[in-house]
Image: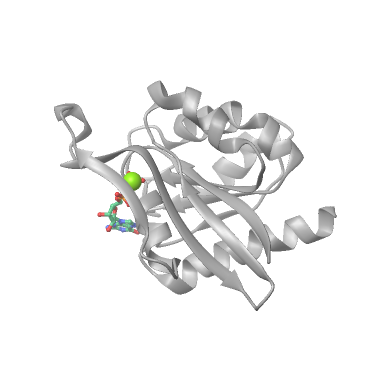
Length: 175
Ligand SMILES: Nc1nc2c(ncn2[C@@H]2O[C@H](COP(=O)(O)OP(=O)(O)O)[C@@H](O)[C@H]2O)c(=O)[nH]1
Ligand SMILES: [Mg+2]
């Protein structure tokens, strides 16, 4: 069995836990606990990580990890990034400054992104509000990072599978 490690990252509430739960073939491991931080606006938050698995045919399996969202856990991002073959950055479009959010993850996962594959997913997108998809693409170009940027609803299994497909295509073309 060949196993690949895929990482999901993004701000609190972007949809990391939701995305992994949508596609995992094993009961997902989720370490959400009651949050003591009233500013997060969510009862539960991921303090450690999410974990799920999905098989690709009979010989390959993806191990899916969700990182803790808050920047104060950035030390764990580095640990989780070790050995990963692809990164999914979930950007919550409903937050005040989603472009800035994206930059934080591009900067922190720069090494992983350059050495592996990356897909940027704009979640909870309201197209009547900026930034537009092309604004995200443009901001990445300025960092010489050219990766797919797509809107998706990570509650929908098919859409999460499509995100993985985009990652796998990149992984294959790099080999
Ligand atoms: N309205 C709306 N809600 C969404 C969408 N995608 C995800 N959600 C919700 O946003 C929340 C994301 O929470 P969670 O997965 O725990 O985020 P995490 O902190 O990144 O793990 C869940 O309640 C989802 O149901 C979307 O496209 N539209
Ligand atoms: Mg979570």
